[in-house]
Image 1 (cartoon, rainbow, N blue to C red):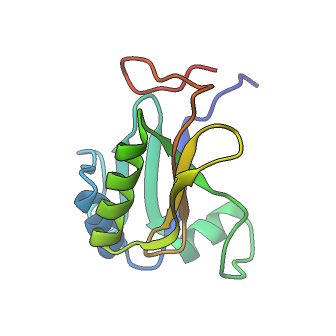
Image 2 (tube, rainbow, N blue to C red; image 1 turned 90 degrees about the horizontal axis):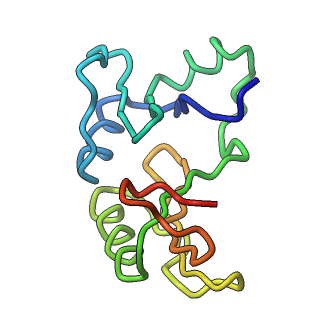
Image 3 (cartoon, one colour; image 1 turned 135 degrees about the horizontal axis):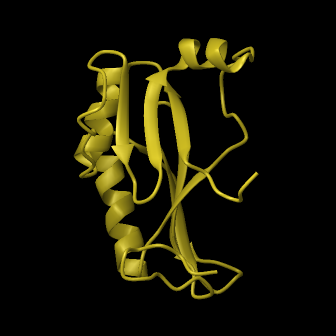
Length: 139
């Protein structure tokens, strides 16, 4: 298997609410989305999908126990001001602030918001991972 991820699907309780939340962050569903069924977002070399949580669990062959699934998504930015601004934007769009922006033990700056379906997102500046012109971290 090649070392890459091509698609992340988030299980959501209400698709239209989830689309509205991500749209408020400036994201736009891709035209291949299926209205009322699934939303796709082109996120720079991979796809983020929003799909009904029950259907996702059934399709994945797992039992949905509710709650956090042991995964946190991340969005790296260029500086601490961007972290704080994105956290504020997410809260204004309906997210819950789990951890405000602050310096980290690894020399960066980060905070966490939780989207309306309970998916945590870390927003971070990592000085050890400079971003290229497309905003992709360089390990």
